[in-house]
Image (cartoon, rainbow, N blue to C red; front, side, top):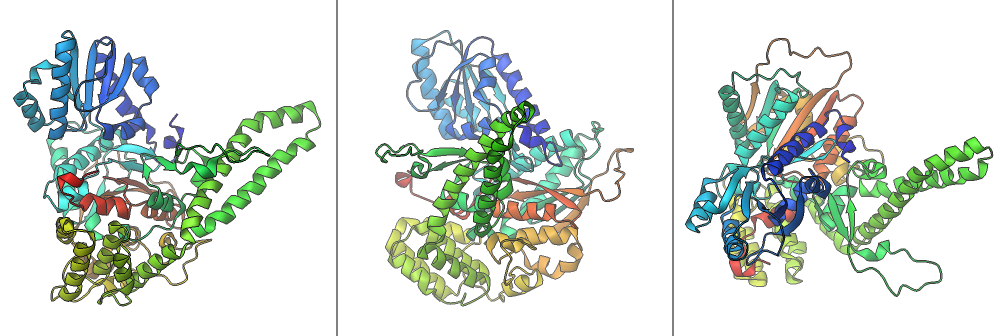
Length: 600
């Protein structure tokens, strides 16, 4: 099922198998038939670890979503709640248990906290008078979930908000724990580099945890040579920009959740000749997106302008393969053609799907609105008129365009100008509040606190210096046959990935001045390896770096890292890990503060 996790340099299936084993062990603790009550947010991440078939093998007969009121009826011995440690969920569980106890007094209740138990939650259950109803209270440590052969995510949606708005470092503790689990399976990582306050915290926690387990050195040859910890707030610009890779645009427009996307069904209707389009499907088309699909692995990281050519080339290859059947004369040749048929049919259906997806995206990317928006983004990135009120943003507010679009653009202008003049910032704030409602004052306050939207203080604007030194803007980026990472944003090279690139060669010493301009400390730590575990590097063997983004990473940044891994002379392969896969919209949304009544 998860073969694509083991194709890469690092076999991430080992991590998935370890997670599955723990899940089986917990389910076996609860003898007899079971019903699982899911915290809805967990169903997606869990789907990447275990399918329903695995649960069924361990006597799971029913599955429900956690809702207030009564549980649906189920003739089972055990009811297991799979939940995140959140207080509001404890109140719902208490309601469920009260309604059950009246009906089925002989049932066993169990609760599994993901990823950690919480004293506060247990206290809340005690206050509600249901703590004693649980036979098992346990935790299921699901920190890093393998999404693809080179990609891990914690899917911790509130990590950035917690770190920068609420000063809550829980997510950093989970990160450090996740990295310790990784080292237990793949060996100690000898070198750690980092940039940013959160990175420093995570590194400190890891080193402390390592000291605490000093006696249990694991005798595994290290798979990773280097760990790079990067704070999201070191590079606030990249997530705000519109991603221009195929996968990035799918995420920007439709949203990819736990490796799946839901698309409008019209383009996927199979029309038979002579039939009208009277009964088009109404259910969204759900596609799984990962490297297990050959064509997707090939086109996902291309700039969207290069996808059309790649699809038509693929179409020609598939047509030619089907034409081969006319040349098959002998029984042996016919047999060989038939044996290849399933693979060819899968390739044809994959091509049809991605051609439809590309058409959907093209309808948007060729629109005037998309072009205007992109033009303004690129003007900001190149430093054009970033210090005055932008007429395009004014027009968008006047037309009442979606608020998130406005917030992304204004934040981008602020980041590229190292803050806005108080007069300009006040004007934007006033316009936004008068058009979209005064309740958004809290959101504006949050964006300011997170450093996305801020008044300019006396200090000079460092962004032009950073842009020039790190070559963040490349004129004439080659989108078809890229030679630099800037192709993922058609000209802008993500700052976060430039830092990663420079670290590999020639090293951060060469950009000391720029690093000082970016927020938070930069540091290097070494972890002692047990004797005999030092790698003997073969001639021409690549080094492997794990890049961990604290606060989220975009698909365009992932594409840029994959591009660096594939470069002939880079000598480095990258594995990517993050607290959450994000795009500008989901990221800004996580910082929005809607009064309770407005939460959809």
